Image 1 (spheres, protein in one colour):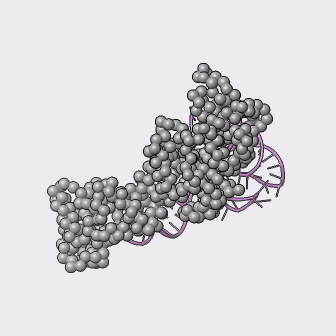
Image 2: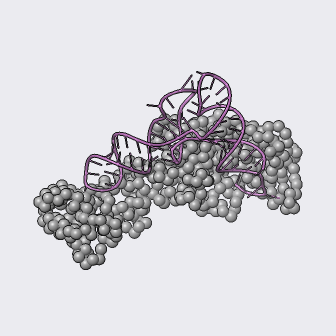
Image 3: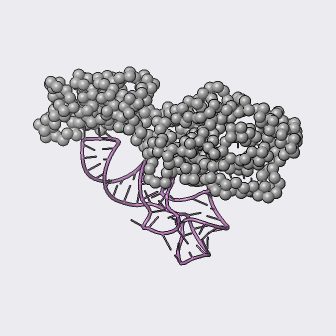
Length: 439
RNA sequence: GCGCCUAUCGUCUAACGGUCAGGACACAAGGUUUUCAUCCUUGGAACCGGAGUUCGAUUCUCCGUAGGCGCGCCA
């Protein structure tokens, strides 16, 4: 039988990293098996389930490439099915009505009272529980609304779900759900319970621990492929030493049986490393498209001051870990309004003799008839040789003078990007500011 | 409290009972580079504890310890 799996989130306006990880595993399983990946929106919480929240959810899924195969099922639209199921259970004596706590009569599902409840979880193996340890539970509230357990199971039945892949905070519920499936005359699906994602304290990963929602990773300049790849490796591995894997490779390699069952800590540093790997390998056109919103968000022009964007990106793309870091890392290429790194000023511009060095360089640079990476390179080497100084004594102050930073592209690449006029002007300005004491 | 689950370097993980316990991130030290990033080399770093089964346990069983989850007219 063709596997049918589903992602069944509540639309709350944010998609948690743990949830989307479950979605990824469902998607990967469906694609690997050639099955169907379905989306069900569990929107029974009417206050939080707004159209905007659903929209956010859909955007996150699209961003990550989690395409689904059938029309979305909205749980609220299944209300009649849920209630009919409850009536059926009532009629067959598998559920009963009771007034628990004086709130009016609710419908309660009858669980087996003796024996052992068992099921085999694809990742956790054989699980069992004494029937006496699982209580009867409410399936329809006294206000007539169905409870999660009933709605969830009914929807899985109507959607013909064959495999339920979800967080292992649901293992205990599974004993209840299986009985519901059986009582409703349906065959329970296979279950695969995924380990939770936890923070560096070993506690469930929450908003307090940093970026916790898909949208936040997106805003911070993480690439969807990188986040997808990273999340796929949390609680699963291909079994060999591969880590950077394409979508196709992941689909090809994915099996539920290779999921492990211990909680996984979320290590943002490794994600950032992986993101850098993806950024570096990104096609230039994609990188440009991805970086454009970052520039705009910082109020910067879409092209650098004195050179082509492409020339700048030749230098910057390999140095970019997160897209959101890009503007700050080469601010000086987009505006004259950039700050000088205080530590760099102390170390590279304050030492005695720096002004003289910059003056020498300025004279030399002004006189260059051609301005290329090679010509500035030659010029500076000549200067150093003439005064028997190390290249570093000249390179570092000049870098600070033209960029305000201690890091970045090689100095001669940097000078070529900025151009002769701008480079010389910045060096002159820096000399002035050093003389004024305004730096 | 009761029940269930989990346990390999700091982190993510690999290892059909027999391996010098492997890889990656992070970290450290070198090399390359004018800086940063890249790249290369090297290094430190783990089987939670105790019994048992076995010729042999990281691996199987039990106990302990620790952590997580569940025990709602929440989902």
